[in-house]
Length: 272
Ligand code: SF4
Image 1 (cartoon, rainbow, N blue to C red):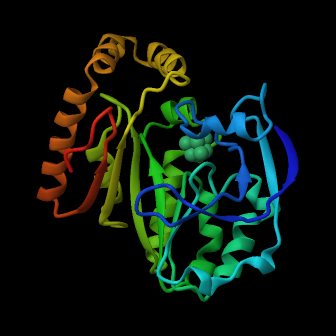
Image 2 (image 1 turned 180 degrees about the vertical axis):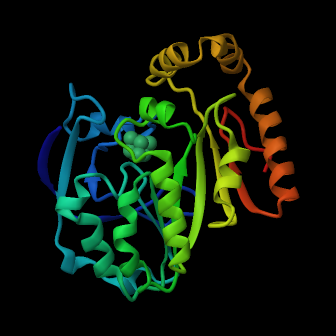
């Protein structure tokens, strides 16, 4: 892992994600190195040409005194959008923790999203916020497959344990079932494993992008070669496949009386 430091003029940035006002990315790069990652474009903009995603991390250096909690009243802040706030090196550098400490007192709605069990470290801090929700992102309960697609992230069982611990501490939680791998992501099993610890589910499909297609297809070929024709078919006709899955998810969540949102993007718009 190539680690270096970089000065960040501002650690809280305006967001162009719909429904999110600000994003906080305490690091540049991501040790989790997910094969499908959509943030990999960051390589081009951050002086990392030639580096591989998942193999470098820039620790942002910032002036914590510039963070003014009152500036974000009523706004929605996501932590994080192009990295994970609870990477293994967060244990040492604590950028995420420092930022949250400075934000205590804000009325902003803070949404944490992670694939790491380290998130439980900050439960004491989460309790100090009026509006905070902590989300765990997961695609599969299968530890072997998870290791192949998200080599640096916590095991699925550890993520489930984290959401349980956070929920039992009285913090609002959500589960982000993402990315949804066709024929692999068993969303019903994931819901049944977590429904005692959250009632709020979000779903996002696997987005095939030119940079991730070879890696995805290679993992599928090694893991479940029988799925290759199916994946090829889905890539040709994404809309039909995702529309069917979306309907299934909606029916299931409504039957189980769950709060849910479906963010399926496939060259068109999600029906929801
Ligand atoms: S945790 Fe998120 S940002 Fe990090 S590599 Fe995985 S998908 Fe990308």
